[in-house]
Length: 413
Image (cartoon, rainbow, N blue to C red; front, side, top):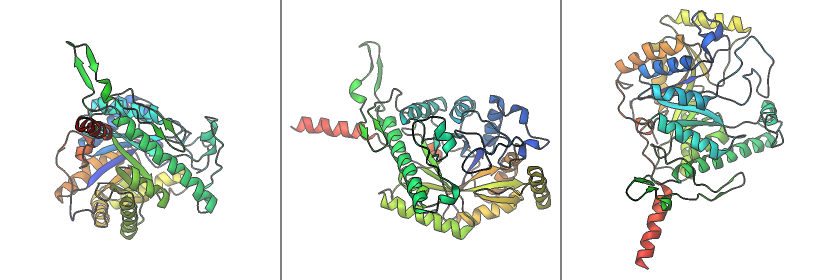
């Protein structure tokens, strides 16, 4: 939906290892010895919550990090290895009270039934602040971990070709089916399916559990779920997009889209394309937030930020480039940019701290107060669930409506 002029921004951070710059782990304040501990992640999320951010995302993949698009690069001078994002989220969420927690999951080689109950569980342990960032994988090395499908052999130079576009479309069509299965499974228990009536000995009303009977090209899932409907009804679904095919997934299936514009005009064009696809999917009246992604290196002095990036680039052996724009400067300069891009229709931003904890603390302790002074960001959390914080309604249960209509028809007959 179009953004109201000067509406407060939604603001989030994307957490990945020691930071998004590949040399961040070598900084003097990096907590490299703690990367695989629960305390490390809990501390980062607590800092984000102190800054009143809407949510954090936690990166994940099915292979080692790599500087190459298509497979491992064999490097040993950069952080390699991850903890599972969903399990990190389940560990840190109960330690927070208001911030949303959105782990990443690769859909291509996982089963929607498993992920649906994992994210429903996360919604329970976070008391309604869970989401999921969905990803696809076209990498041969990741397919080889599972042995269930022929590796697509998708190379970055092939993406613009007709064959590459068809492979990409197939991956994202599968992702759209996957999200549909997730949403149906979350709806497969009505909200009041649990009776817990000791006197009658009935814990659940079996008539309020529903088969989803999903039959598609990629999945056949009967349901119902084994986990009651999540507190939010449906946890928030997010996706990252760089081009038309993933934009279509954002528009048709997601609640949140992360995009990587080059400038305000590019942001305006991306938002317009997503809104067009949203309308084509019959979702024009609904809210799909489009957030701009930026990698940030922030310091009180712009020269210090530039020098820090130069030092990190030197340690990495090459200039750092990303799928998103890399911003180097002061928090006030970043605030100017965010407000300029927001006028292009973005409803908020997901910032990727180049080095942790430094750039995260610059966001929470410098950027947030600057935006608050401008009236562009909240001064307290206004809602108890992630959907409510984002202004998203709690979805009606599709099967409850169907069951009610069937009951009314039976009475009329």
